[in-house]
Amino acid sequence: RKYDPYRPSTNVFDLITRDAKALCQELMPNPEEETRKLALLERLSDIATEVFGEAEVLPFGSSGNGLALANADMDVCVFLNSKEGSAEEQVSPVEFVERIGDRLEKDNEFENILQLKRARVPIVKLNHVNGIACDIGYQNDLAIWNTRLLRAYCRIDTRVRDVVVIIKTWAKRRKINNPYAGSLSSYAYVLLVIHVLQRRGVLPNLQSIVVGNGKIPYWDCQGFNRYFFEDIPNLARYWQPTPEAMKQSVGELLYEFFRYFASEFRYTTHVVSIRSGGLLTKEAKEWSKDHTQPQQQQHQRQQPQTLQPQTSTVDSPALTDEQPAADSKPVVKNRYLFCIEDPFELDHNVGRPVDRYSLFTIRGEFMRAAKILSRNGEGAISRLCYERE
Ligand code: CTP
Ligand code: MG
Image (cartoon, rainbow, N blue to C red):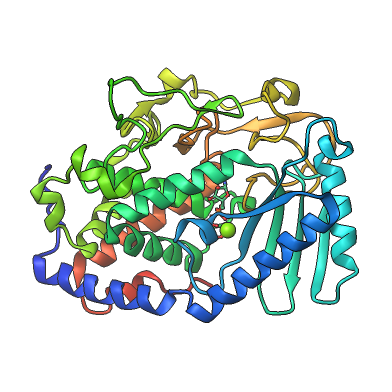
């Protein structure tokens, strides 16, 4: 490990760990909230079945990966198991939004229903009278799989959730968790945390652990390989953390996260890639130049429903990163200032919303955070998460 003159002492780390864990406890969604979410999920499942025949409703995002903070929105995705040849076989995303949206309108248990038909990923947004805000998407397999990947990482070690919860809280309170405004999604921050924990030896690379003959299997999902090792209870047979990694406290890992992105990570050349368990270069990925390209080229996919960038009038925060375009020209701006490779969708830069200005702000926040944690343990977590503005 490189010499770090700012590295705090063990007792400072202990204080940070203590306060971080207390804050995590405080921010846990309570069982009552979970119950309301489950009830809403069942209700939506009944409604989808009523409208479309056979339907399955699955949670994704923070409600599916175990990384939710209290009062988080719920992201769900509807899958239709329509029988071959039946009239229901081809329900387009727009039609889906219309039909389920219209049905929900008839129920006064749902409020503020929005049908975002022209979004990159068409969705219905609503608030349930029980207080849960919910986004309903359609047949988005990749989102389900990346949620499962994140959940698997979370189950490996309890420190993962603690670190993620603090980072998400810090990013929200410091106002750098808004892809519409050029900052990063929660999903992006979780990928950054996994990257740092992989570097520290706290987490393995689940996409490279193979049972049996040593070759990574290809399990297709919308044209991408969704394979990863998911049998976490038996992980120890294939991978173990280093003794040094086992000893690291949550406080130490938080400091390491901020220090790394404040002063070690090279924004101009590197790409964060949890799929490869480390760094790639922008050059190797051909992510060197920002460019604008026709939408059609962005859509060489096996299914129309992907998480690809696309110009749209309205977007779902959970699934898209872009400011809605004023005109409807089919062009998309790809930015490669902060490069974070999606673990499955390898041509998707999850850091794409970041522009020059927001990168400056985000890096400033990394530096501020590293400085706070390196000085004094007492009160550091509350200073770290001090609400901006
Ligand atoms: N997602 C994605 N690609 C993105 C952004 C999001 O695939 N560029 C999908 C992922 O499946 C992710 C989900 O959308 O898990 C939700 O993203 P986000 O809202 O950023 O994360 P949450 O964990 O739901 O965080 P929060 O609690 O802040 O809503
Ligand atoms: Mg979410």
